[in-house]
Image 1 (cartoon, rainbow, N blue to C red):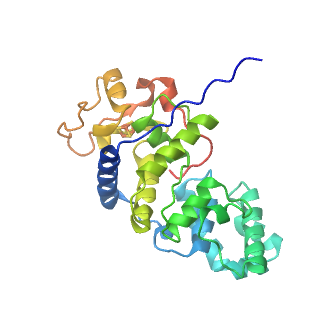
Image 2: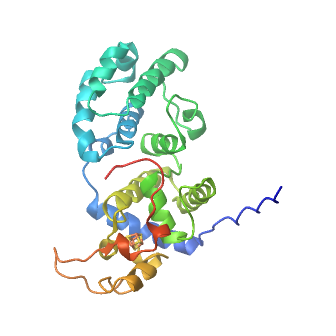
Amino acid sequence: MAPRRPAPPAQTVAPDAAAAFRRRLHAWFRKHRRDLPWRHTRDPYRILVSELMLQQTQVSRVLDFYRRFLDRFPDLQALAEARPKKVMEAWQGLGYYARARNLHALARHVTSEQEGVIPSEPVALRELPGVGAYTAGAVASFAYEKRAALVDTNVARVLQRVFAPHLHPKSGAGLKQLWMIAEQLLPRTGKSTWTHNQALMELGALVCTARVAHCSNCPLTAGCATYPLLAAASPDADAQNGTAPRPPKGTRRSVAKKAAPKSLTKSTASGSRG
Ligand code: SF4
């Protein structure tokens, strides 16, 4: 049997680089964030509904379903008491129906076994039906403002491109490294973690997308390991130091996917949110 390859050393982010990353990212988010209904609540039930609906599904598609579902099942108790058929009806058209079944099972479990209280810690959240590492981090940070990391497809892509272009985010080892990077980037407080996680996901959905890396609109060019590679491959890219004057609105050029080496443009598993 061939000897096992040693695990690659953990990717580390220097504290100064992490602080600069957060500063640029958060400033960008304050200016460019979308006004989305689940950003106006800290109710863990509503956050959970939004997170499950957003898996594999575009934001624009989720908005109506989210509003209608909450009109019909305004809280965890109402959902727990509903007949499965009614829950599936409310989910009809959104697809990936295992999400609806899991959400219903979760509501019944939490109301019957946990006095109706959705846990706040990622470890406890992961015990619930349909809740994986990403969703646990999302509920902990978005509902309870806990200092918890999260990595979905969009976040994995951003972190890979900025800090570790050599990693393959679809591999278990690559994803593990990206989670370690995400942990190192967390701000000190839970309140800032809400902003931080939302901002990371927003940048992956709007700027550093799977199809096109819109580097000329990105606040992270100065510290991004992939940006010089993309800029060198595309004569249309902005200056490599990210400080070039921006062209007039509507004429900004994007660095197309085709300009990048293949390994830099692969996305990780599931998740949409665009
Ligand atoms: S500079 Fe380009 S590749 Fe780097 S994070 Fe921004 S959009 Fe993505």
